[in-house]
Image (cartoon, rainbow, N blue to C red; front, side, top):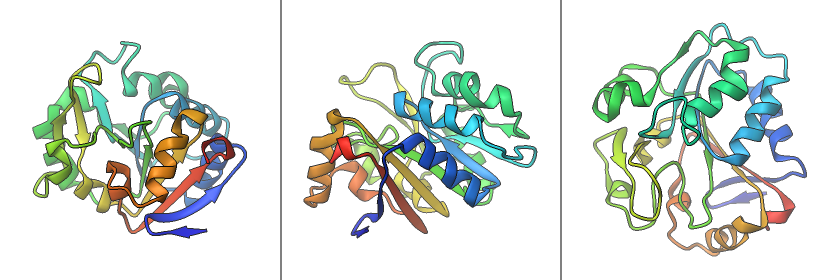
Length: 208
């Protein structure tokens, strides 16, 4: 099924479908996400036969907390996936900060696969409704965050996502149902603005 914001695949098991897609695409660079669904996606991917020796890993967004903090996206990804598969390089957002990470992303080839989620408020990465970061056109990585979400953050901008070859957005859970329906109705949510060479949405029936 094709929607104005990308190809939509309704799947019973989003983590398994995500792992299948990564195996099929065999990207040489990926940008990872955070959250409970991302954790399940990366656990499913860790069990697949993927050669990670030539894969460069970035973060699409991150909270400004130590990597061993429970809220760290990188820390979660390392515990569930990266420490087990040993990719060639993992570029830490917190270690570099927004300005240097922006320079890094500019210097690298376009990311082949960016993994994103859909927040209950319609946000994606750390791009929140009404945030000035949504209108940034001259940066790939910026500081972000607001009072409704804990911790200052660093995030890919929409131009950084648009530069990628494939954006994969995973959506599951009844708590995402309202955001998904608003998205399908054409409301100007941050996730509605996701663009890339290809955009694939993996959506569970419980989110419809």
